[in-house]
Image 1 (cartoon, rainbow over the protein chains, first blue to last red):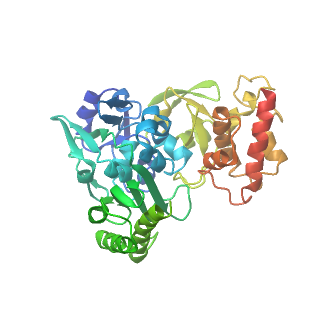
Image 2 (cartoon, chains in turn blue, cyan):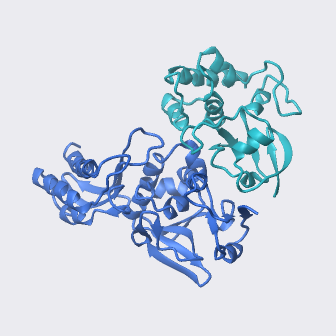
Image 3 (tube, each protein chain N blue to C red):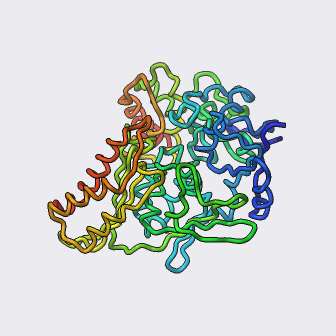
Length: 281
Length: 170
């Protein structure tokens, strides 16, 4: 028989089939097709949700923006709503993969893949976003920070799927920052990445949020650095403390792309660099 | 399973399955071998085609996913040139070339040629949306395509020249 393929036409049809043995969701295919070909994954039934209308909407409702799981990265970059309200997401997604990957790859796919290096996780952590998970029992919302459970592991239960991401409208005074370290600009899987939302007046940090990718089993917020820096003036000693706290906050591994030591050093440098930038405006 | 889709302006119907990629369908079934397989994992762009008008890596698209959609490959490009009439087969005849292809030839942007169809399809996707791209926009549009021969300088020159040719033809 071989692998089966089903183009899913409704949420009900998806839920009915998702519980079947070997059932797996296919969307942009940028990770899944590679993993199937290398033998890493061998689903028996592919449930293609890439054209499911309910999962392809970007909506602003009150103080939230809801993005359907099957919206592609290119569609997000072109969205007026996202461009107006979520400049951080634009900054990050414009550096993800390349045109071809962004035309296929989706926000939901990048999240459920649960790579410690998932670029889109960094802005969603910074924006205190939630994921909306749908199962036959109904829907639940959980914070993005609780969605990731480890490399490749998420809070999704059997038979459940990620329907949308819900992002509270951020304070427009927060400026976006994202720096990804890799071998080349395009198509790089981050060796380490730092994202931030920063509101400063002169050298006074009104608010800072920091998140890092590829330096722990999941993308993480650097809460201890945030707590130390919020409401403080940027000084040489603050920068040094922030650097040390960043070093202590991460738990990277050695892998094919870089050593753990290099990752620790580079994330601490990026944090220091961000605060030094405040002094040089 | 049976799928129907439009390739290079021509409606086709094929029997396929979930193990087959769009790349395999194009090359093995439809004998459109202009689309190349480089890395097979979305890193090199040699297999770039347009799917419903957007550049994608055909090695990452499963054949059943193109049911009801439109695919454009390098073979379908020349008939789209304004200066030539369309051919019913969806293929170019003889030495007719699309202005982008002409630009790549004239500017020496082709060496071994393996990456060229992918680069040309990425260029086409760029120029149909943005007829006068600046250098940064050109680099960004081509960042998913690798060339191991040219060093890219001639390719960037060719894209600038193709944009000029296409503006003149309109």
